Length: 211
Ligand code: TYD
Image 1 (cartoon, rainbow, N blue to C red):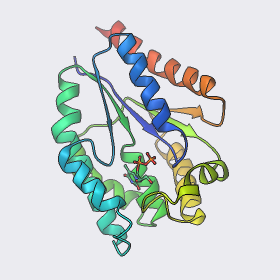
Image 2: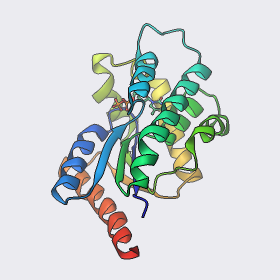
Image 3: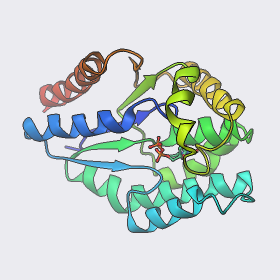
Image 4: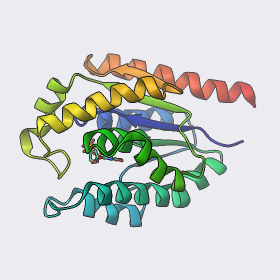
């Protein structure tokens, strides 16, 4: 049976990376055959693309180029890593996926959700997460947490961009609510962890029952 695909989504500074590590530990402890991966990147080719995207020297990159590079990195990720792992019955946990492109490029860069979805669909091969954990934090909090140090080319964008991205996510939650679980990431880490694991348990238990 095909494995389950879990994606983590949320604005910069929503604590996804910390939660990724804890999810990994949890799956290891419970002997769940899984892989942990991230976007942009996840493959050798994808990591090269990631480097191009986040490099602050590439200040004059056009928004369309940026969107196509994210889509290219994702297509390679699906081809080389996500689809083969799912076909081997593994659970795949990915830090960011399609919704990031729809929020950051579609809304943040103003390219349009439909337009960005269309260029991504080409490489998706029908793959969509079985569970999207959306880490919700008010943008005022995340901006304080994240942009203090300057960050990469996208993180270094100003508050207006990140507010647009946040509004974009809010639109997407209504437009594509399927498989999305909202996690209140402003809560203490123990509470965020509890909400996260509950959603993962529900998904994986469902898988056991279907077998
Ligand atoms: P990421 O490494 O996930 O940043 P962080 O770990 O700090 O959340 O992603 C790098 C940046 O790329 C981040 O600002 C989000 C952005 N991004 C997009 O704009 N579009 C996308 O499709 C993806 C996957 C990420």
